[in-house]
Length: 175
Image 1: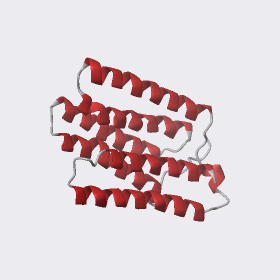
Image 2: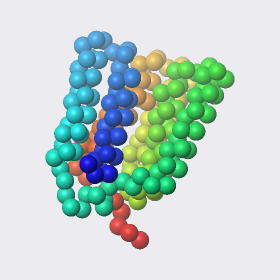
Image 3: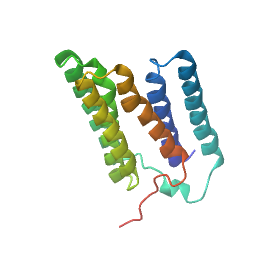
Image 4: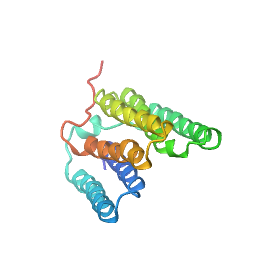
C-alpha cells in the first residue's frame, strides 16, 4: 500500500467518523441511509485505493515525516486545549463539533505545506469555514441539528469528496 493510499484511507476514515458521529438527530430512515452511504464511500476508497497503482504514485503521496508529526502534535494540543475551555469553562458542549472541525481544517493548512500540496488549502479553508460556522451557531444557541449538519456532516462529505473525486490534491512540483 502506498503512502497516498494510506492518506486517502485516513481521510475517508475521518469522513466516516464525522458523518456517523453527527447523524443521531436525524429520523431513523434518514440516519440509516446516510450511514450506509458513508460506509459505501469508505469502502469505495478502500477498494479503489487497492486497485489503482501507478509508478508515480509513491513519489506523489504524502510524506509522514517530521513535518507531518509536528502538524499532528499541534492539532492534538489544540483539540485538548479547546475542549477544556469549551466544556467546563464556557459551558458550550454543543460547540465541540465546531471546535473539532475548525482544528481539523487548520491542520490541513499545515499538511498542505508539509506535503507540498497546495490544493489541500481548498479543503483546509472549507473545513475551517464549517468549523467557524459551527462555533458561531453554538454561541448563538442555534438548534443542535443545524450545528451538526454544518460542522459535522458537511465536513464528512467534504473529506469523502477530497479523496474520491478526480483532481484531488496533487503534489506540487519541487521548487
